[in-house]
Image (cartoon, rainbow, N blue to C red; front, side, top):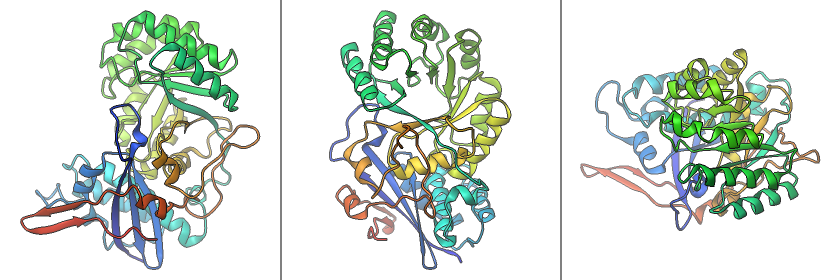
Length: 393
């Protein structure tokens, strides 16, 4: 069986707002091999990722991503890893290649699972997926009262954990940030797991982040996520030395295994957050999950888009201890909700469990997605390199 087609589809909300909500657009991936189809999703800006798929070759290590995918044999999980290695070698100087590869790798696993009638987690060698404790992932309100109302609604909805991030946090005074954190804690109640996401707002300014620690400690926050940009490893290490009992979390921006490893080995983080739609897919995410576990760092998925992406991001650590935290998008756009026919819901215990159907166990809703489809055409030198194909199964 060989890969006969790799297609990208740009979907977006009618209006994309200037807020920290990554569910406002998505890049859907469709792979065909023989009679089988696999689906994936890239967590990246759609247009430059499409360009990475089809761009003309610049030199031997800067080839379009599809050149390493089309025509490749796909028979076993080893082929998925081999194809990923080809992309990284042939597109080493194409910086969007890992983002494009992410959705392709996910679709490869989905296709294999559908071919063999097995869920992806079983193809990964996992005998039984463990349940996860979902944390409702939301943005801070513009004012503490809005954050308080969100937290109360999350608690009323049965969540035992919640993450508040972005919005005004870190952009105003230390006192204003303390009020936001206190409001989140009050709304969740004393027993709720509280997580805070700074969204890299302090760059590498350790002093600015340090000023927020007393409020986080007073509120019993489990972690402070992304206080700094992903590459500021020394800043992470410096803050981690004094943040306890609040752990640091980071890694969602890692687009390869080595970036995630650096944060684990040298950044002092307690939680590594990996997005399968950014790091190169399920294959490298699985590698990071094993690496983190061996070093006593908790692995957590990063997911803020559709439930196709959610299933993909949960696969790599499906065998980690039961009850481990997982990000669960709680304020998705209509696009993210309607993108799939089914969703990964919470059970009666409030836990999340992976689907047992073949592949990712999640089907895109193509009829719904057509309403959000953005037609794209890329022409170079009078030749059409890309034109949005028909969105069919």
